[in-house]
Image 1 (cartoon, one colour):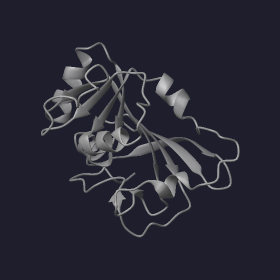
Image 2 (spheres, rainbow, N blue to C red):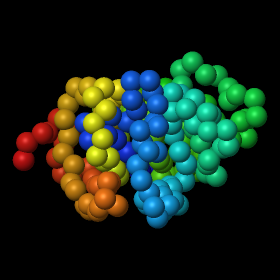
Image 3 (tube, rainbow, N blue to C red):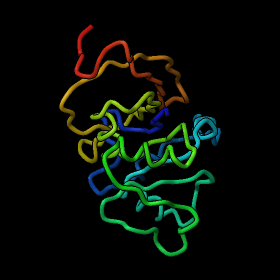
Image 4 (cartoon, one colour):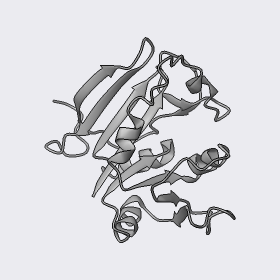
Length: 185
């Protein structure tokens, strides 16, 4: 099973502003209309696993944006909202339990989304690769990409590319030759 992250953050490491808003992100000029590799990434995963906060944010889009199965990790939701029963499955438990439940559905490559959920998966050393797109904005405060971790880990940069005059996207893979807790070379 492979767990991957595809996410954007501000230059100072926030994924949402203090009001949990993403307007700052969609304000970046994109004359080409590019999706910056998102569709290619999603084509390489079997399903999405997102936290409840991310799910509630996505519900605000009005139109459901996903064609792949979506799992929502939540200890408070027990069923999908009306109208989403055929689009979403609610799962709960620790990250390893979530992966085991999802694997039983036949999914092998998982897109993990949502800052708190990503942090939980990093804490258990379950993320294999991350594609992080940095924007040239300083938000000063908000929801951080990563929360506090009890131990560090080493990641290898596998590629970096400039997407336009504003965005830099870097792909990292977890260096499994270095055990979790290792932070030095």
